Length: 120
Image (cartoon, rainbow, N blue to C red; front, side, top):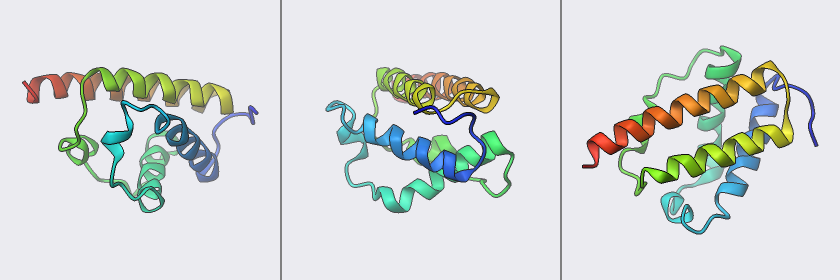
């Protein structure tokens, strides 16, 4: 069901909710998100992507610092990226969709690199 490019927060909500629905089906990933209240967390994730893709102001949180205490293994960033990119491809096409995948790739690489240094 490709609906064109990512244009607004509603599109980002669809992307984020679809993405996490898929990600949380992966048994290895589920424990990372145990105890997270997704209905209250999703607006923060949407705000992050609105800042990144739609140039909306207001998101000032350090994303890495928010995740540092989670039980993540470096290879999980690769899983995250694969699921994110496939979700974008299933739902959207266009400039912002491509930018979302590029930014997710950079984010995944940066997180994984920092994680490997910090968690040694």
